Length: 331
Figure 1 (tube, one colour):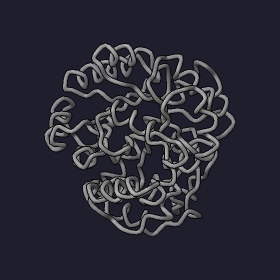
Figure 2 (figure 1 turned 90 degrees about the horizontal axis):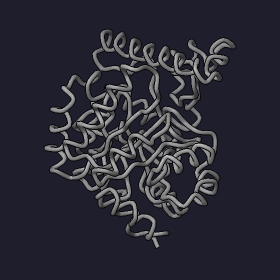
Figure 3 (figure 1 turned 180 degrees about the horizontal axis):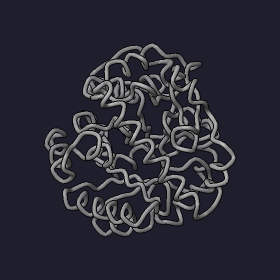
């Protein structure tokens, strides 16, 4: 196991374990984010979940997480896609406030990370960037990021098309620490993926099946009950592939967008409108479902292929400690 590259990640982030609780819409509630950080990993705030889904005033929400995390480091997810001027200005303000509240680890997604990098580096922080292939890895490197989040074909939610080993082979020559994102559901898989040469692992699905996660019990039990064969990829939720559990709702919805929307996503300008449309549609579905069930996620459940090895609902701290033990015991 390459301990040196993992030590780089730990030094950059302040975490004690090379483990990220990935930002999840709508599942990243403050209690979950904080519990992972308090246990030695690093929880990452998803700002739309924090404010829109869980109803916290943004700055006070960050302060709550910091208190619950016992002042251990937390991270922040900045989606830098320029879908609208209003959204862009809001994200700039969110990043500024996160820095004011002491956040120093940022994950950028869906766009040019340069403006985030400039702000965060000026404050002494680090930025990692979500990528699915070498082309986007090069864009992140050229944008000045400090590391890459390699989203593979086993991830839940938005996913890539390459397996963890192939994706690392593409990205490692860029000379940045690379974090694996996708396919890790238990401690043995955590140690195994790190042994490939990754600097850390970003985990999502396993932490949805944590006691601190406020997603409904039906969502958690669906993850526990599901097998890898139950995970499918659909474009009908956001316009791009999303890994979900194959529920009757997904079967009715389908998995492919039509020709018009494929054309919209290919255009340099029209793709921004398309992403905005699907983003608003997703928020509407979430609000509708919350009104119906009070829990959210009742009609579709994002999850990755790691469901195969998730067999119980555990406290987040216990998950982190189990993963840490496997990591430290590995040769």
